[in-house]
Amino acid sequence: MNLIQSGRMKNWCKLAVVTGMMGVFFSCEKGLENNSYGNLSGDNFFKTARDAKAATDAMYTGMVEGSSYSAGWGAANGSFTAQAAQTTDEMVCNWDDGGNWVRLNMLNFTPDFTIVTDHYSKLMKFISQITVNISRVQPIDMDATLKARYIGEMKALRAYYSQILYLYYGPVPVRLDPALINDQSAPPIPRPSKEEMVNMIIKDFTEAIAVLPDKFEKEDYGRFSKAACYTSLLKLYMQEKRWADAIAAGEIVKGMGFSLISDYADNFDQNAKTGNSEIILPLVCSSSGDPYTNMWLAHALPGDYYDSTGITLTAWGGYRMPWKTYDKFDKKDNRLRVLLQTYPTGKDASGQLIYVDARARGDKGAVPVKYGPDPTKADATNSSINYTIFRYADVELLLAEAINEQNGAPNSEAYTLLNEVHQRAGLTPFIAGSMNQAQFRTAIQNERLFELWGEGVRRDDLIRWGLYISRAKADGSTFANDDKILYPIPRSVVNQSNGVIKQNHGYN
Image 1 (cartoon, one colour):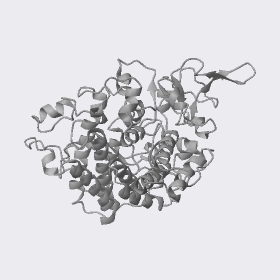
Image 2 (cartoon, one colour; image 1 turned 90 degrees about the horizontal axis):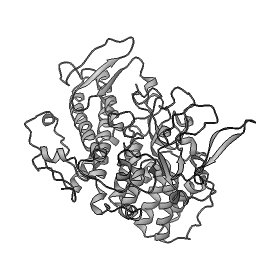
Image 3 (spheres, rainbow, N blue to C red; image 1 turned 135 degrees about the vertical axis):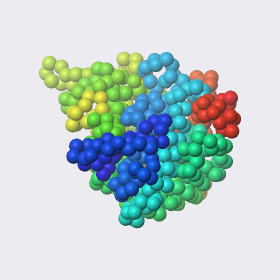
Image 4 (tube, one colour; image 1 turned 30 degrees about the horizontal axis):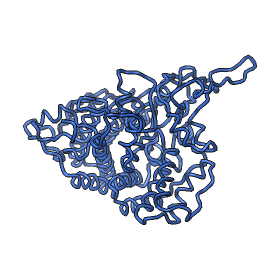
């Protein structure tokens, strides 16, 4: 079963993580007994291979932090995607929701700003649940290879969620003893060192890699594979500036048979529904919203947008790419097909499309329609178009960047990697040997913007390049300082620990 794709959940039970509890509940579909499982106890759960699979599947809901669209890999302001865009030069928002969007863009964070602190609380619960689940799956009498795979998937997810927390908050106190997770008398544990946190993440990924397949396909498409583990490790090494380790991880992914597809936009429409040679890890979505849905277009489309193919689309008119960012694109860049200065608003009497120029009208920026409309027309708001979490173009650009930083200059491989992405966009290739280290770094920085906007990487990129704070200052922020590179830990976490868990600098 693939719980990532709700259309394939027939005849399987669905697990949902109950926020704030360490229990999970079954709700079975037609044709199965409707059993309700309470707390995770050895007496009534974790007896069969089916239970092990269901427990593993449930942990994937951490990809949206237990919500369908508002957090994790969703589209709302509590999501990784929106925050990577709205806290950088990638996006601004038309809405005035009490100033939350402006606060994101200006890096005006506090320990009570739940939009940026909730990741901590939500992902910590999944990490703890994974630790418990692993301990309960281990004694099940089942196929040893399959059991190892499920445990490997859960370790990969634990590492991935821990990595997100590390990038947002710095080292966080992850408890790995399942016997203590539900022990209310267990004392709080202090934050680890950066080295300890990084090593914990690497250990989980390394153990997962040993038992996972290179890729998952067909009914298992969307699960955490060996390639996804190496991609996540590559990203971790890049943030730590461990260039040699990043190169090693990137080269492994490069050797796994991935390649760029010919049409950039097909990574973000119905053509990618079941995968392609470029996508390493998707979040497989459903128009029913069960368990995940894609609501990017609803957040981005202006209210007068007209779909020429006749699909009815919800259009809240929120997200825009600022014109000064949009203007960095070469006008011949074919990636502008999904980033619109002009867009259709209807048809005239002769049936010809009518277009409006958003810039001429005074809009804040271009319309970011990266994720295409859902041709199933099943729902105007909820789309079954997959979110792209990891893809090979990202790996190529990170590997090229790491080579340039490690060697002090780009080599022929670095140029090839950059040019594969650049040329697919219809642009003239860079000439090998034409750039020094600094010039190549700038070319990579630009290409990553042009290629990966809206894919949740811009915040990490700007932090790695030392540009995160300066961007906010350039846009007029009076709140931006080096403390804002990390989000604050929730005030409640610090208070409940009686000060054992220390707040990030600048937020006391």
